[in-house]
Length: 314
Image (cartoon, rainbow, N blue to C red; front, top):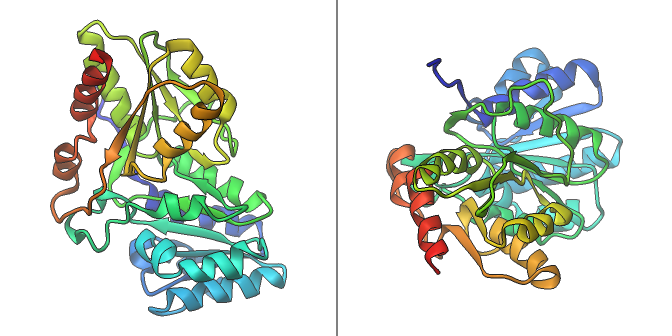
């Protein structure tokens, strides 16, 4: 059996920026003293004149990006999710969201998989914070292929976009000729009949692992990738609820305000049914190896399968 290729989506972000930079002179990248970690240093090496290091001033960085966008540039401002969505929230809301400027926010090191950096840096609230800003597109890609496609789509989209990337290297699952990325459109990863597991980000791969474990117990799980949290693919969510009648959401984020909440909002208005939300339950993270933390918080294949079986028992 061939070894599974794993790539961190932050690496994909940096590489995608370089490819876009070769094609578009109006693309500018900003960072806040974290270029080596966010991987925008890859872009800086190729296009030093179009990379702006703002220092440890995330709010200022977003303001500069807003100014650049107002002058016709397409800025991608980058930092850890905790700082891009947290520290700079007011500027994202008022300087980017309110005037609906063409600013892209590349937020890396999101979720519990940040690992050893601990609770202060493990942003579990960013999807909720960004989703509530009017007109903000929110994307959480599952792997290298999807991350690169999302960066390209974000550039082509006219308006503010929040892109969520991870520190941990994750399996490449979309490396196939027929893969197509479209903002606002999810897709079925694996067909199933008994329960639908709707996942986002690195949890899509974990949901696949869970499906294999569930199959051993005679449970057929359908896996759905919702990479765009906003605008969410309402049609697909409703279709899945109608098909299996059992819906589970999985995210490396608080169960409050993220994918689980978005799915529940759609179903409560269109096809009401009990939904099991899997994620982090109203608590902060902690320091530790990323893989071990995902296991502890039951966000790996084993933990997801266990929670799905409990849900199906009713």
